[in-house]
Amino acid sequence: MANLAQPLIAPEKIPHTHIEDLIAIVTGTLMVSFGVVMLKQAGALTGSTAGIAFLISYLTHCSFGLAFFLINLPFYWLAVRRMGWAFTLKTFSAVGLVSIFTQLHPLFVHFDALNPFYATLFGNLIMGIGFIVLFRHKASLGGINILALWLQDRSGIRAGKLQMAVDTCVVLASLFVVSLPMLAVSIGGAVILNLLIAMNHRPGRYSGV
Image 1 (tube, rainbow, N blue to C red):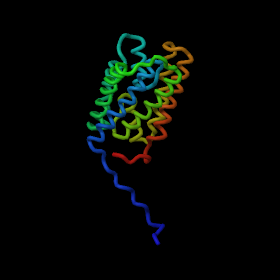
Image 2 (cartoon, helix red, strand yellow):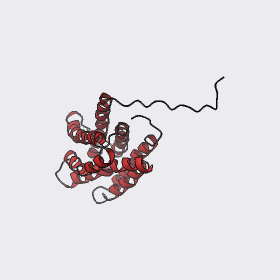
Image 3 (cartoon, rainbow, N blue to C red):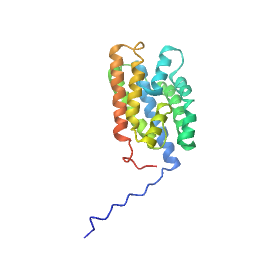
Image 4 (cartoon, rainbow, N blue to C red):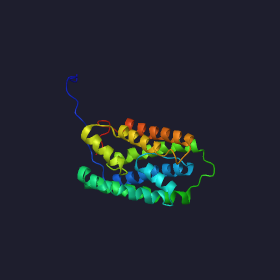
């Protein structure tokens, strides 16, 4: 009979291969960028650096992709110092792909009839899944994501909780850009996105490296 008092041996952590990382980054950025396109067509907003990029695109003639790429540039310095070159290069690639994919999706997909409330909630859900894929392969989409992941690794503060607080502030700052009903559903979408991250990406839950 097995000794029930014997401590369980933790399974060996098997690192992701470069091919697995590549596939995950492409998959995650495709999902995030598709969610962005849905939000953009619905006239909705989200939080974090993506929310700032939305505001810039709504208020100027700058595209979301270009604004998103430029906003993230200052955060790479923190990423290199705190998270290392591997994380930074993956994140730079992910940000670049999202910027490109948001320009490419409309060439292949067009929504003739899209309920803005459904698009906002479902778009955030898709984005949340994409974020989890990126996080689990040691990548992010820059900006607040870098800060959130660094604090989670150093202090145990869940990335989703920090992002929820920041995202809500960003969406509230958009009060004069969108209508009140769209602002309310945008906040609801941001909450759904970050609850999804908080439930599925936290210390001890996932052992991938």
